[in-house]
Length: 504
Image 1 (tube, rainbow, N blue to C red):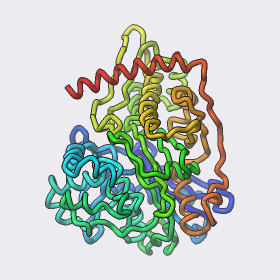
Image 2 (cartoon, rainbow, N blue to C red; image 1 turned 60 degrees about the vertical axis):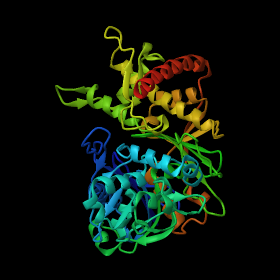
Image 3 (cartoon, one colour; image 1 turned 180 degrees about the vertical axis):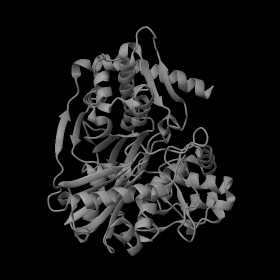
């Protein structure tokens, strides 16, 4: 008996097949081989074609079935994890009306800020726990304002995972957790944010049917089964945004527990049982996957947009040989970074080149390299300064979360993406003064385990984590903490220079 999990990211689509009884991964596949592209029509925009997600999902599904040599009838449930905050709009025929405006697109910032002021900060924060900001609701408002002909044809709006579930089943559905990540949920009313939609002039009937995060949401349709090679009727039993799902995949379900990830973006996600909010909306609170009205569970999320994408940019531009069109591997770049002392001999990098950063109050300050010496610094220094800059940005947000009484001595993360770098994991532990526990899991595995819970194959959450194993624990290097603190203060000073320039 198998469980199939999908992770629909902005860089790739991944599928993982696990044995339900043992939790052992039988096979994983991802596509494309290189990072998926984004359409950037103008500064601050970021779009992707949802049909490309489906194209790559079809590819990885065929691979795990073919290479796993399984009977597809033995796949008993499917789970979906997906990039958060994106907007997909379809007409009555379930045809996509425009490219998806994805998570790092900044075009709706001013609309969200305007709504925040008009509705009132107290109302927004007490009801939605967030400013409407640059989230899905505001992106839909942007379509209404700027593309009225398209908006008039909108039958339903969805998040990226809802679109994939629609393609699998033919049903248009969403979850309360998903709506909360789009600032489309009223926590006081335990209902969709009808008042915000009314303020934006968006009809409530555009909201899809709401289903639980865990449960028998829909079944794979006959056309989708034929296209993917799956069995018709296979239950779709779980869906969640990538960060709530990342926390779930790490068994982070209880108040005080913290999960982290460092993929294209970097995230720290703390679980709470209170409806708390940041008065400045720099970090944001959403419904966690295990939330119920009887037992509230929320996740407070800090996101740094410019994380792995900075590493990827360096690899494609600095660490590429024009002679043979080959790039260094990330392992080789990590080795270069390790060869340089802490502080990269005065080189500092602000990694904010991937759209407006919420924790910087939606300012789009851009990436910056400070202190560069043509006579002293090498590509190895850039590699080191990039990793340190990402960690300092995460530390900046970590301190904001501490102000909300979200504290932890341990941070859990998948042994993947930038945490594969021993230098990154060690420096993160030292700079944040936490023990970093790394596990043999990722988002697609979490989605598969979630499907097992939703389909009733696992009687409770604890059973879902059979096979989850801690690969290593990284303790802070206390002898370096004073040195890193001084470097961090220099980084903060450079950040303030750029923030002052932006606001001038």
